[in-house]
Amino acid sequence: MAPVISGEPIGIIAGSGAFPLEIASSIQRAGNAPFIVGLRGFAERGVRSFPHMTADMLDPHLILDALRSQGIKKVVLAGGVARPGPMALFSIYTFFRNREELRRIVSGGDDRILRGVVRLFNEEGFDVLGVDEVAPDLLAPLGSIGNVKMSVDSEADIELALQCLASMGKFDFGQAVVVGGGRVLAIEGPEGTDAMLQRVKELQKNRRVSLEKPSAILVKASKLAQDRRVDLPAIGPKTVQSATKAGLIGIAVVAHDVVLVERERLIRDADRSGIFVAGVKG
Image 1 (spheres, helix red, strand yellow):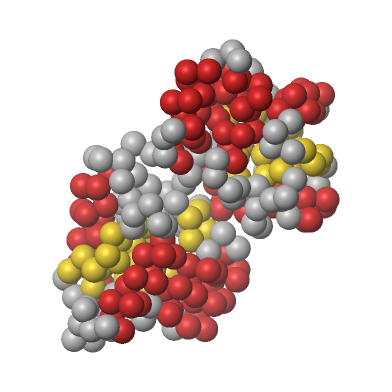
Image 2: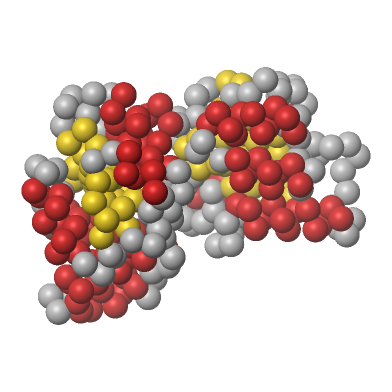
């Protein structure tokens, strides 16, 4: 991993949520200069606190020209967009040039779309960086993250979860599982983490899952072949809320592998709910 040169301008292609703004702040703290391209209809108003521009996803010429005018050669993708938003960013630009490749990318899953976006940026002379390269302080550290401590009893369940995730990673499937009482209770599918936690809540409510005592834990890690430039797993306040509603006692993530979105609020909400959040070894 090549280090980002101090003082170098870095472009942020910003979708929805607070995460792009957190990346921009982290880039500034590291002595680099962020420039945000806020995608119209998605980016937060907070982008105005940084050097920025607003562009439509279907106007790639404007986006590319703006990045080049700022002397930017490195970009990071952050925030949510409605599918197939990431591909739409370059659809007009590439459609006539490589129609078959565009069709193959758009017909695939989200991972294929994101990889297609990375490839297209690369073709235009930009390096796409991962969050771990431009804002490593936003990743989960090793050890307790909040004030609630993980019990020794949870360690065996977390090890079981990591083994399960490693097995799923061979098939490029899933970044999260819920474990408890020595069992895997749920595996994340295309629906995402919050929907999986809702499923766990319903299973316990309908007594399809019964634990002798509260012990269910959410465990997240990146996939074995994860492209760390896009779609690193993340947890945030919404994850804590969903985990609490599902009756979980904690959240464990692989240290330096999972993004903590709105860390201060995440910790505050977890402490208030009485669930632990911890970074563990993968």
